Amino acid sequence: MNDQLKEVLEFSLVALSSVFFIVDPLAAIPSFLVMTAEDHEEKRRRMARQAAWTCLSVLSLFSIAGTLIFKIFSITLPAFKIAGGIILFLVAIDMLQARRSGTQEVSEERLEGAEKDEIGVTPLGIPMLAGPGAISTVMVLMGQSRNWWQVIPVFAAIGITALASYYILAGAGRVRRFLGETGIRILMRLMGLVLTALAVQFVLNGFIDLRIILPHE
Image (cartoon, rainbow, N blue to C red; front, side):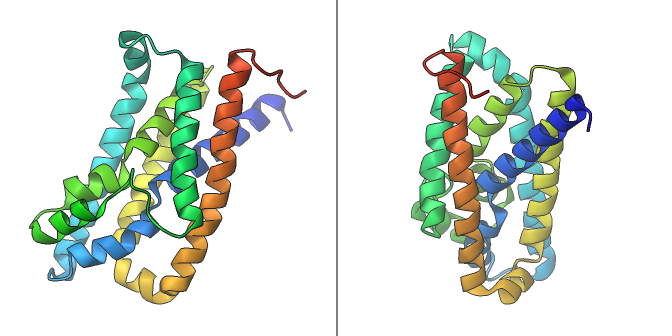
């Protein structure tokens, strides 16, 4: 296989797994069902669509503005890789215990959502889907894109994740019945395991960029 093609595929896989696992729409199903308990199916689909568009818009915006934000606050990419890795690790630890991280939602936001008539933009879109962990992830991925073709997998990962989030939330009732609580928890733990490895890799990449450790040949 061509080395460049192999690099593209590897980066695409990392981008998609990082973004999808940190957004984690499957784990948002219970909260979504609670907040839309009194709503009809059409309204649930509309809320899911709003949440998906919000997730797509916010993550795309921060992907584009990431470099500018680094310059404004004089933040180096290695520092942000390490910070992003730590945030991912904290989220992953909660996922390994089959629970939503506090960076994605807290009980107060869930209760507020249950009382609101429109929940698509907030709290569902932000911060349940596009939370601090997801934002930092796309900024790190975009920041370490050395070539123009590496930008495409980042936006593709965001688009695929947003689309998957819509279908998962729009069919939340069916997904929950199919997987069951146990199935959702097992998937959360599996995704948490992969996310833990990605978080550690982000931190290691930051240390390598700072020349604290040597890259593995």
